[in-house]
View 1 (tube, rainbow, N blue to C red):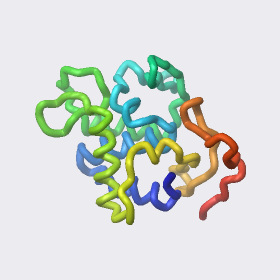
View 2 (view 1 turned 60 degrees about the vertical axis):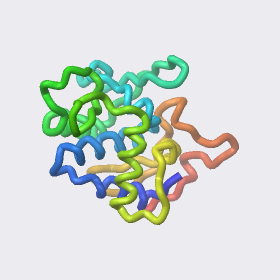
View 3 (view 1 turned 90 degrees about the horizontal axis):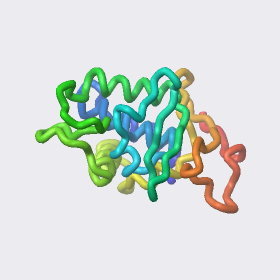
View 4 (view 1 turned 30 degrees about the vertical axis):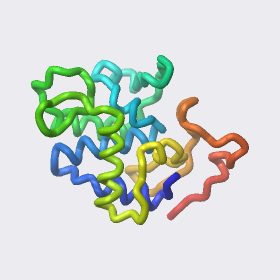
Length: 173
């Protein structure tokens, strides 16, 4: 996995003044906070976000479909990208699109490239792959700007079998 410090650096590497940075930030926040895989982020559609109910429909491996709560910070990151990043005239319903034409949905490899690019810009000492983000068992509190332990929100946000309970994860200040 990655450390809380690395996760913060990864998020800071996304220049949210640019459309691509808002997209990258939202995709990485989804992976960090909800434990989504790169492929699950790639297939996320506009209709999968239920703003009123505060839920996200996730289409996973093997046709699995899960309803996850939509944390406020994740919703804000997605909304920022949708309002000030994603082309309004895009013909596809996927949330995350390529920045350069043609404006088509990102693939799982494209989402992985977002993570690798952010890791490179952050100057992390090793290349991070999107799959590393799915095992981060911490949540970022936007209000406090600290990392706090949290339980995995879904069955595919894994706690390694026989591993430490989320309650055992130390706070980083």
